[in-house]
Each structure stands twice: as C-alpha cells, then as structure tokens.
Length: 266
View 1 (cartoon, one colour):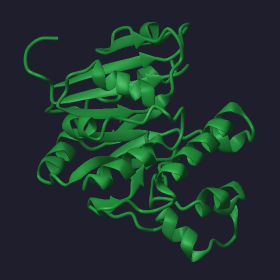
View 2: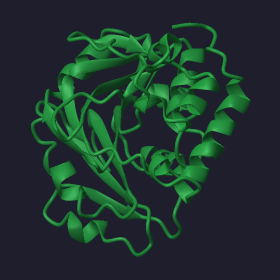
View 3: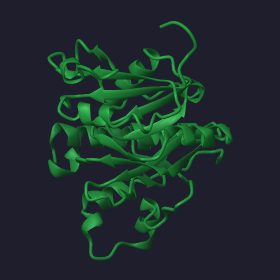
C-alpha cells in the first residue's frame, strides 16, 4: 500500500462463512460514512471460497495454508493492514445503525479508553448481553449448569453478567464480545496483540484484561448497532471440538488471572 494510512482497517476472519460475508461487508457503507477504510478478509480454510463470495465488494482476501486460531488470525489481519484504527468484526454481523466515525471521535477524546464495543442485537432486534464483568471461575461453572435458563439467578451472577446495566449513552464495562472490537492500532500493538495461545474463546476477555493492566478501559458505544447471529456452538454441543476449545480457553485465562481483577483499574 502507498500513501497515507486509512482511518480504519476492518478485519474479518472467515471459517466457512462465505454465505454470510456479502451481507456483513455489504452492510458497512453507512457505518463507514466519513472515513477512509480498508477491508481485509482472512479465509481460514485452505479450500474456502471467500474470494468468490466477495466478488464486486471492495475487500481484499488473504488465505491461510492451514487453519489458525481466532487470535492468530486477528494478529495476522492487523499485520497485513495499515489503518490507524482496527475493527475486528465477525462475519455473522450486519450493520444496523450508527456511524463508526462518531465512535472514533468518542475514542479520540478519551485516551484512557483502549477498546470500544457496540450494541449487538439478536435477530429479533433485542440487545444481546454482549458485555460483562471479568469472570471468576464460578461464572463458567454456573453457565455450564444452565444458569441462564434458571427461573431465578443469584445476585452475584446477575452482577457478573451485568444484567440490566446497558444505557443509552456510552458506558464502561469489563469486557465485550469479540464479534465487534474497535481500537487504536497503537493500543493493539502496545498490548502485544491477541494471545495466540487461545484457539477460540476467552481471547476477547484476555485482551480486555491485559489492556486494563495498562490502564486502558473497555466501553460500549450503544448508538452503534450491529445484528449478531450468535451461534454459541460450544454450548450446543458438549464435548465437541468447540467445547474443548472453550474449556481450554477458560483454563488458560484463569491460569493467567486466577480470577482476579486487573491492577491498575482504569
């Protein structure tokens, strides 16, 4: 690439998501209004068809010779782009409202915010619970026992899940779903990118935890809204490969943090 770096690099990792890519990237024009941006898709399957699926869309496609973990793909995408800001976006998302330029203005005025999320929506338009407090080991155990379906949920669990704490104005959280991660490239490089020891799951929590250690907070910008067709594959198929990756991610995260909140607090 030549010339000035664009305002934003959008990085999407596809692992057999060819059918979703045109809707995801095709929805971004209103979100990118007022910005110079580049879009990169990493095709994680050697036999993938991302390039064919994106014919006619202004996106570059890079293929992997062998499948990599999500964190490794994110790091590869960051290294292959030049934007001053990075947006890591899931292929199962579609823009619904808001401009990323406004979110970047918000970020520019607050140097102690290192990571910004949006409102993620269910397919019926209701908000997903896509932001939470840093978990203790009790949280994944409770979720594994079906806590989200219990007729009552303990107060400690509701606090951990930040139930009912969304607002109309931007608000601070501990971590956000990796479906939408917006940040300065400088902060991504300062924190060392994502930890490639995670194959899938918990790398988003780990990223927010390590940013907080650097004094950089995570917030949600609710005016920016994206549909997210959240699959929760690991919950639907216990002992599947996705489930094993989820358990491995949890073990790695708790080995690093011991369930403690990071210090210093941002």
